[in-house]
Image (cartoon, rainbow, N blue to C red; front, side):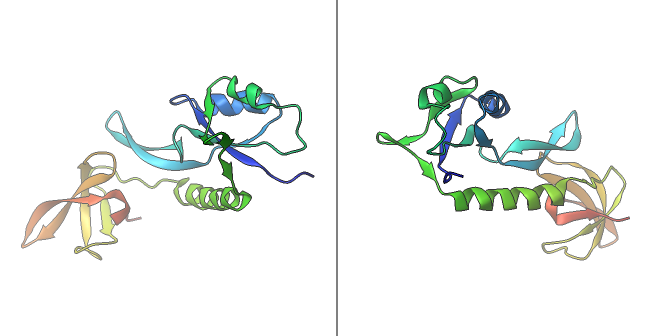
Amino acid sequence: MTAANWLLLQVKPQQEMRALESLERQQAICYCPLVQVEKLSRGKRVCVEEALFSGYVFINMASGQTSLTYTAVRSSRGVSKIVRFGENPAKVPESLILQLKDYEKSNLSLLSVPNLPQKGDKVNVLEGPFKGMQAIYSHTDGQQRSIVLISLLHQKAPISLSNIQIKKLA
């Protein structure tokens, strides 16, 4: 087996998967790290998979792989260009690719089963000045934050917290 020779490709906007599909049809070994991201969709929070590096894909151009040329890579659907430093393509160490794959596995396993609260659900505050307190989930406040109602001085006070600071109680 030949040594890995990973290069970085810039792809057209929102076409990471198209570029991967096109290159893999040509028997290229490609990699696009994915992460789970919480987004708002029609007023509800949902988890979606996105490219970790939007607009970029890695390709392994092993020295013994003669069937795939730089010209074939550049002209593949979805590919914009090979990232270069001067005249030489930017080489990515195999160790970095392995670290990205480990990160991707841990990120996907943590967020693959979302437990998103709905309006009126009881939540526990995990971080910050209100750590350990219980609150009532009210609504989303952008893509990464939520409004919760915390009992302070016998009143329900609305507080904006990051989504990672709260956890729905069972």
